[in-house]
Image (cartoon, rainbow, N blue to C red):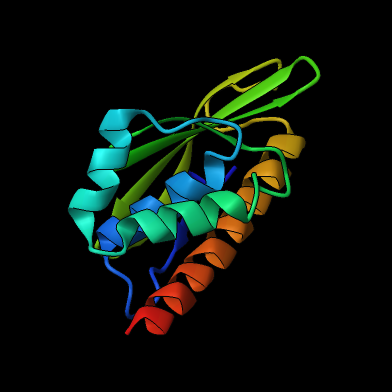
Length: 143
């Protein structure tokens, strides 16, 4: 099992804007709290538009959802029947790093986990790449 998945942040997008875009993508089913909305607008002048654009694009194609987020770490959850998976998404200057932080009924032990979990995390990583690309397009349209 890979210890982590890493995705580069596209040039032209800041770390903070990447956090906003990813949280927006995952929050389709969640309503941002007042505190989170204030955080979005604190980052960049158009942070709210990135968040909303990512949110309107829909929950990820694979059913991931937002569990929690702040300006450095996002917790994403996934539920499929009796299986549950949580991934920590750290957004660093060097890129976005995904790692499995918790699971239920996926035979996680030591460095191994059920292969379906790896497929689901791969799909999440692809959704994040798409979302970051869309956020760059939104930003370029603002300039």
